Length: 544
Ligand code: VG1
Ligand code: CO
Image (cartoon, rainbow, N blue to C red; front, side, top):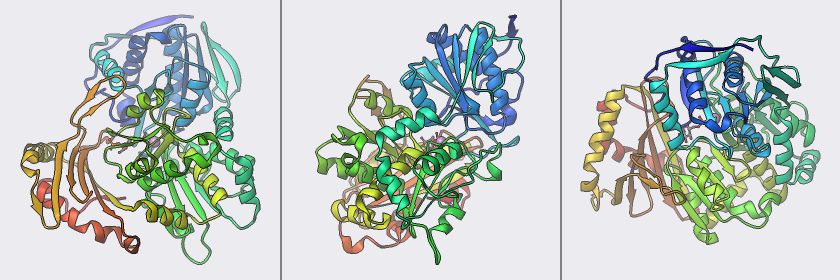
């Protein structure tokens, strides 16, 4: 087969963000754009030569085209074998599972996660390393440096591979295996959770659930596992067929974008349990009858109850949360006498802690939870965890959460996103606040006294690598916090995220309005950061 060497020139904008390289589809469609990035992966990840690569995506527009290009480039770069999800479908956690199960040298996931899809929307590509997790910073940096000097890429001339035909095909010397995207992942789930108990819960006739796959990748996974293996009634999974444009919506499982699902938990005939996941299946939202579980609380509750579930019955060595995630998990770790690690935003920072066995459960405020079963956050895993817990406790979601608060106290929490703001204005805001941090220490603002104020820097306890400028933390003596950081996943302008948190130990005060409790901290944030005048925004675009 003919290997072509195509001359190219570098693009200057291929530095991967929080979760891979994410751009508008039309940017990826520029001649050589995807190819340059993919060649940079092959040039720097030399284990892939003669090795095995996993490839799949969330089914969004351009997924199939990108997979064909990657396959032809893999063949030209000496990859021995590629495992591809049938139809080009692989969720992010399933990819992680498959990399680990078959000990491959890595995987390429095509997704822009919860961002909308379609010809004028977003696309993305991320590389996962051989432990199944997102490439760590030193790897993405090497790849990025390579994109700046690349002058040619390799590709074979060939017909398209049939992505829908299970079994092995060849592309030059390379084997392409079209695999069942769901099977290995479903088996892993069965090993972690008590499927019989969950089956009985569904059979009892007293429990109804809805899972909103948001026309994204988890549709086939949820249908197979919830309806076929666990006996949930047909129709439990809604929007279960992946679509290239996610049916025109944002595949983002939150109160705004999964509004129809939220409605099913309210009104005169609410379901007992509802959940959703995002474009690539790694995020989750958990709802009970008329009740929303914040992701930070969900993480803390999973950590506190893990020992009750088969996959974690001997207890967990520690937990980790990303810096902006509420400190609810810290309180659980304290009570259990286990370690709690605070890492920068992004799943890649959990990998070393998981590999070293320092933690077994980790999560982020951005609807991400996971464990040591794979090296990615895992939406359906979190849903099954909750189902297993509901089956054991035979209590409502709301009761479980209220019991948790009674034991550990409640961390009221909210995140305000200012999207697509002027990049320079956002950067100046952060820069000027950063300058003032030292002066803030010890200052009193109304009821709040500043305990610490810093720009978060993380030293990885396993390999000693340091990640600086990970966001501004202003902590108060009563356990409240204000956090500000700029998003690393947006594709237009800058996104400013403000995270507010207040701790309330008194059970009498656990049913108050989050917005009311956090209003003074929101006002203080405005006083300190001057968001309105600097960004021209009166209020956040999204509040979660
Ligand atoms: C956001 C979230 C972060 C998450 C990342 C990827 O990043 O805040 O917690 O890890 O998305 O999630 P940022 O930099 O925009 O705040 V996903 O579901 O895109 O893989
Ligand atoms: Co995602």
